[in-house]
Length: 150
Image (cartoon, rainbow, N blue to C red; front, side):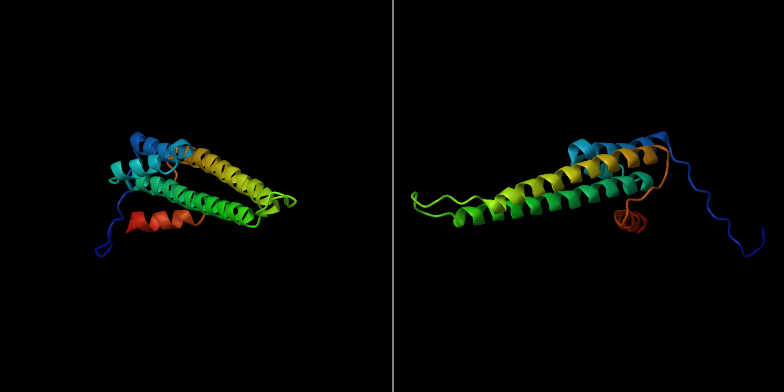
């Protein structure tokens, strides 16, 4: 070794517990939404690997929850707008609620698509975490890496 060089630190080997908790964060988000990843993130902050994977699962669940709530608010907005435009007297011909007829299936499809994405992400990234990979979600992974590395 030359006089001016410093040996790079050897990367620490991940323990089985770290791999298990990181995988569990992804698996729990399927059934507990944001609660499971949050508990793992708060209890295992000493491990950068576990924190990184738990944060990714937590961020995805926060985004999905916000989209779900936004979709529900939009659906209720359409429902109330449809009710407000209905004729007041009983003798008038009843209108077909076109807005609600279109909003409900779209909301249902988006919600089921979100659940399918959550299931897919949970399974794939659980397996990757259990193998010890620093696998990142698109976009969200960079946010989690910045927070963990800061």
